[in-house]
Image (cartoon, rainbow, N blue to C red; front, side, top):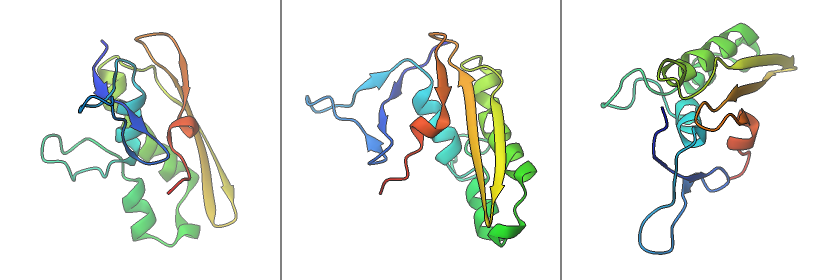
Length: 127
C-alpha cells in the first residue's frame, strides 16, 4: 500500500520545497526507507520501533568490533516495518568488512511501482 511522504534530499538531509510554501510529496517508499535507516531506533515517541540501531552500534562499540552480521541485522530490523506494511519487498543486504569499516548495500523493490531501490542512492555522504 502506497503512502504519501515528504520528499527528502539525501545531500542536504532536508525536505524538498515545492516553491509554494509547502513540501514536495512522493508516493514511493524512498523517503520511508531513508527515515527507517537514518532515524535512531527508540527515539520517536510515535513509534518506538521506528528507525535503526546503526547509530547505537557505532556509538557503543569500537568500529573494529562491529560485525557484518550486526550491521545486516540492524538494517533488516529497520526495514521490517516497511516489509510488513507491504511497501517494499524483503531487502537483499550485502555487507563487507574493509579495515575498521563495515560497508553495506541494501537493495529492495518498491511495491507501489515495482522499481528497484538501492539504499546507497538514498544515503548520501554529503554534509
